[in-house]
Image (cartoon, rainbow, N blue to C red; front, side, top):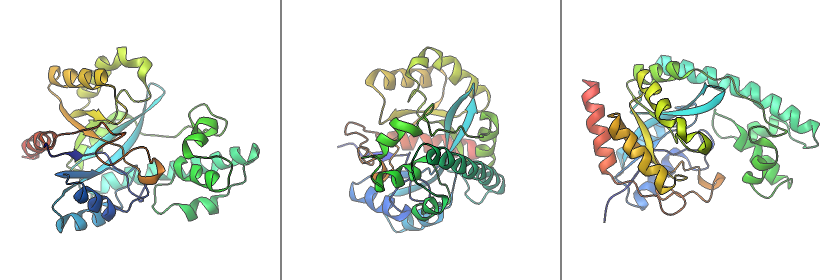
Length: 286
């Protein structure tokens, strides 16, 4: 049986429900070779994550997920093997979180205006970490009985274009890629075709452009990818000499349909992906 990995997970330091330690415990329970913690716009969970990994059979990889804006769209980059104490990285993430907090105020004002009773105080109570966003807002609305699930909230009002949606102020791709590299990490484009299926015809040119900015690789294994999308990304990575990664985008009970390492049930990322990434990381680190 092939050993597996998961290099895209979220703890309660951002919008997941498992603590960083619990992610390591779950990874050990299902016999993963390695797991990366890639919280949104924060590295505050990394110390606990790495400390727990030291006493585990699972290899813990410090990471982060950074949102950027490009061509009027929001895209996400993953940084793996980042130095979570890097000042430049921490400053960028702090700025992004500050903009996120301002956005939350505007979202709540919109929701109040259309009849949903929710306050900033409630939002701070429900969030365990410093990166607070729409999933936390959604969980409050579900708890109050306005909706049956977080997905219902997003479908009704919090998704892009919805009545409660507010766009984010985000860095550009080059800024995020440079900061990841300056923090000692490798930079990957997360879920490059997820929620963007109509634009797959532009995917190759987009990957080439991000590579010119310093992109190291792409997430070719992902919970929502079809077999054709997965194979397409593998081919592009080979053609462009890019490394590949993969992950479930695990959020715990905030997205209960997504399991660690298994995604919706069929995801399977062999640990050869980890060893190839490690080899690449060790080469560029020199």
